[in-house]
Amino acid sequence: MNNRLYVGNLSYSTTNESLTQAFGEFGNVASAKLVMDRETGRSKGFAFVEMETDAEAQAAINALDGQSVDGRAIKVNVARPPERREGGFGGGNRSGGGGYRGGDRY
Image 1 (cartoon, rainbow, N blue to C red):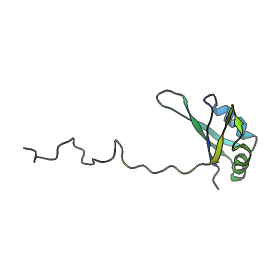
Image 2 (cartoon, rainbow, N blue to C red):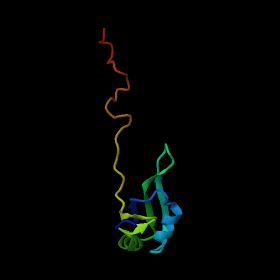
Image 3 (cartoon, helix red, strand yellow):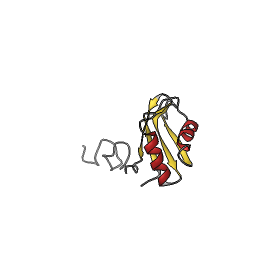
Image 4 (tube, rainbow, N blue to C red):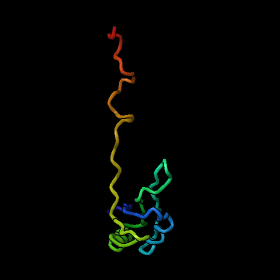
């Protein structure tokens, strides 16, 4: 198992401290990080919590999945590894040029 947990359906009032407190009842919390919107600075409603051991992570999942935290029934499960992303800026055009191709335009 993995000791990094995904926590979803969080209230916008939930803080890193309240997550640490809630998960701390089931073991040592290595980190608790809310995911924030870059533009608004507001929580996106989910977080990642890392427990010290796999056993503590499983205990937290068993106890907290579906339970109310800050007035919302939260979803807790093992976090999946991030998906690999290719390219940037839409990906397609790798030639580095604009809309024209070489000198065959005229």
